[in-house]
Length: 227
Image 1 (cartoon, one colour):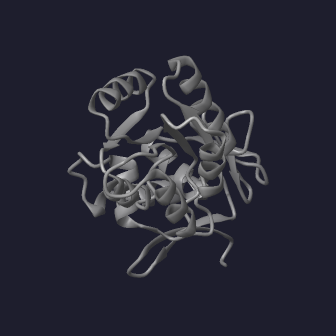
Image 2 (cartoon, rainbow, N blue to C red):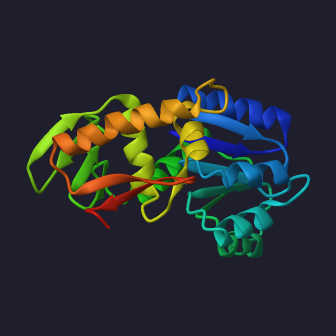
Image 3 (tube, rainbow, N blue to C red):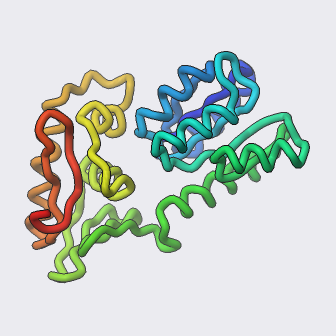
């Protein structure tokens, strides 16, 4: 689970990053609002923790602009501002939840879990598109029409998860490389093509009507049938 923390308080960000990594989140951190918005618009994150008072651009403006540009990633707004009007303005700007400082770690983690479940749109940990379903508990791909299933490698699972979560959108090779391999990886775009080939073979194996289409010069899109 890739998480972006946009927080300018050094001690807070270090403590939060350590806690979140212990909970198995892959954490990237930005201490500047402009850099934070750029990272959010890469669209490689599963969830975002966003402070309000930031240098460069405040959290309200970041959330509003991200939503305007089609980013649907869940946002938890984390701030010292506790006035009701601030909370309402944050939610109206595009945040999905709001937590004020100081807070209990247990509450933060619970809210992140709730937002993650909401984003997956399934209470049982599955994610679906057309006739396929991904099961996170077994890392498997099931075709409901053909009643066929197959285990996926970690990267195959992440590729399909990312494509399903962004169905209807074309994902660039850069987005996929960052999402699957991360900022610190030396992975090249041919890694994306290799694993796309593996994933397509798994879709064919379960006899799914879903397919991954390459859009020339742009990237990849998950489609149903030959559409």
